[in-house]
Image (cartoon, rainbow, N blue to C red; front, side, top):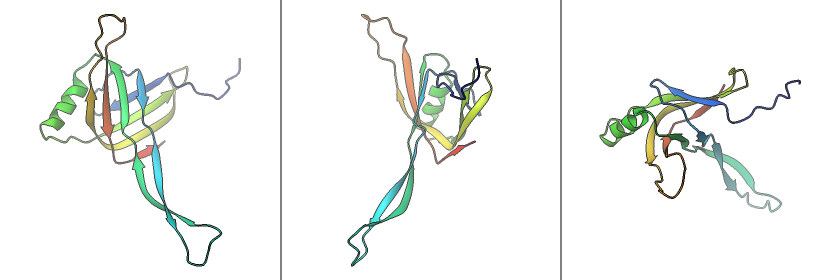
Length: 139
């Protein structure tokens, strides 16, 4: 069967200068340019659209409870030690070859969500952590 060129989203890895562990979900790879309306006097047919600030969405990482590294990083933030790190998200093909990569600059954790615990359900205990960053570069 020939390669269709379509990549599936379930093979990915997230890495940094410190081990972050494995993740079941990764979301928030989003950049948006705000648009400013600039109406010109006497021009009623349209409004000029000018680019404004660029916004990045927080990176959301979800995983089963495993290593302590992410919590330790966030706990340091709570103590006032803002350790910014580069983070890479890599999309892999079926042979584990990197097919796409997004690099996030000067990232650090800003939100941690613990697992939902419910004795009546049979689900994996998962935690979520959000990282803020100062830009994305696609490579």
